[in-house]
Image 1 (cartoon, one colour):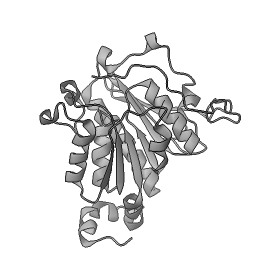
Image 2 (image 1 turned 135 degrees about the horizontal axis):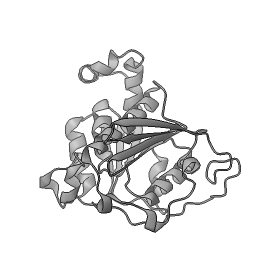
Image 3 (image 1 turned 30 degrees about the horizontal axis):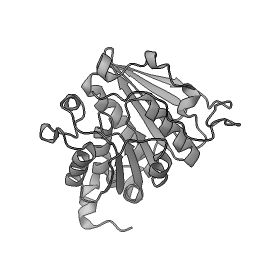
Amino acid sequence: MELSKEQRRRYNRHLILDGFGKEGQERLLRSKVLIVGVGGLGSPVALYLAAAGVGTIGIVDGDDVNITNLQRQIIHTTAEIGHQKTESAEHKIRALNPDVQVVVHDVFLSERNALDLISGYDFIIDGTDNFASKYLINDACIMLGKPFCMGGISRYNGQVMTHVDGSACYRCFFPEPPAYEEVETCATVGVLGSIAGMLGTIQATECIKYLSGVGQLLTDTLLTFDALTMQWQRVDFLKDEHCAMCGNNPTIKELKEYAFQPCKA
């Protein structure tokens, strides 16, 4: 791949970046990333990956823009209330960077379509807001050998982790989903809008690092954030050899969608 004159100008700050350079940028332009959920987390991820020059960005979301989304889902605007989130996100990505090919999947991720949707991409971003989708993405990615970055936010807190082949998966840290009555959603307890941007940009950075081959990833680590104290904490953990999904003798052989209600806030 030979960068055009316009691309050399657009990506100049990457090209002169020590350890990144032309090779790193070319890797981005050849890459395909799937963002599951273009809400609070997916919004900054989509914008930063588009700005960075990721060649193909797939977006999965079957929801419409709601006025309550606008407090944190910065890729959508008031004028787009009632419109499909994928349509809204697609317009912003294309406007930001015409280099990027956008693939729209105007559906909710499910056990019926997860493997097909995920299989064509190099890296998966989990920007979902419910445990059902998080376990579904984890399991589908493990089955397909796909790297992914998980993010989650609630109240004043957030967490993020990255998985690549051979590292700990989400189930190594959280083996089973919590009981339904124990689940908090942003619709019931709220969420500080700005932390979606803080965690989402970390997810975008993890993705860019993986695709370009620079730096160390947040593998075998859960990074947590508390906005009230502005404290970050790294919780290191090892791959569980008894993990039902990625262990030495996995017991989960097919996708199962857990019956949790998605947060609509």
